[in-house]
Image 1 (cartoon, rainbow, N blue to C red):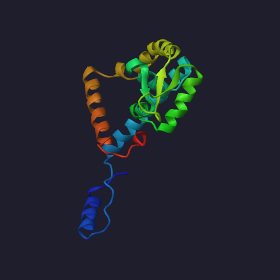
Image 2: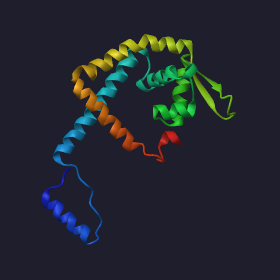
Image 3: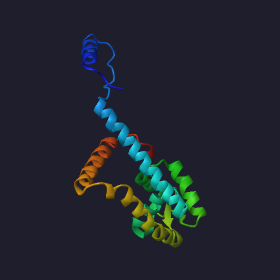
Image 4: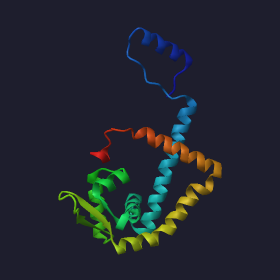
Length: 179
């Protein structure tokens, strides 16, 4: 939904009179970009999820957890840190790790420095699964995203994504993965 110039005049009059402010509606151009963004990100996530389900028997979020663990020192990470890294709640992470444990790809260990904490550890089988599934996943990412963009567009996309992410994670924000 957009606001027309005459609606902007009415809004300014309401604000001057102390009436409740109207939302800052999207322009037609902004609405078009917003919908294109939603459409593209939904299709991309679905495409990558289907590829990983088909080729590796796991959803995209589980693959991301395995990647995070593979890049961590000694292939282990505190559960709270892994939840923050993956941007998922601790509850969702606990469920995901339970499924990954069932497959033999991850195991939990008690944290030696904190009796209440736990570590998620990527097993050798989990690392092997990641090595087997990575080439197909990278090919899917490249075909779905990078092969469709010019080098300049890749740089611009990176800049835009970092700007958006920074704005959505202000210091002190009450984000679900920080609770």
